[in-house]
Amino acid sequence: MERIAHFSPALSTARAQDAQSGSSALEQAAKDLEAAFLSVMLKEARFGVTPETMGGGVGEDQFASFLRDEHAKALVENGGIGLAEALFNALKGDVDVEST
Image 1 (cartoon, rainbow, N blue to C red):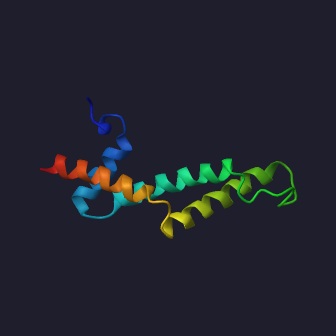
Image 2 (cartoon, rainbow, N blue to C red):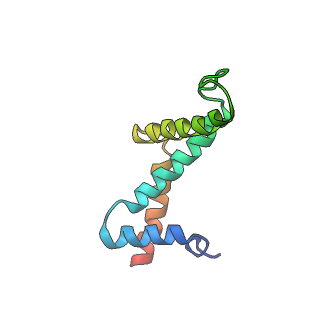
């Protein structure tokens, strides 16, 4: 079975940065993924959608997506649903194995 790193250059880069600098690049990537996931979930749940919230029109959908994205980021920064932590722990194990 091929490793995930072969399929995702961004993941490989995040892993390399995290291993080299000891920084939280991998943790940030996991948080970004959780925020994107939550943003889609909020969209599908119709979070914050009321008739003509922003006056209607074509631009409302675009600006509503920015608002959803910010809500999702705020959720993640305040603990989220645990997805980022689970991803970080799973991927960090792979980094530790690869670096030894």
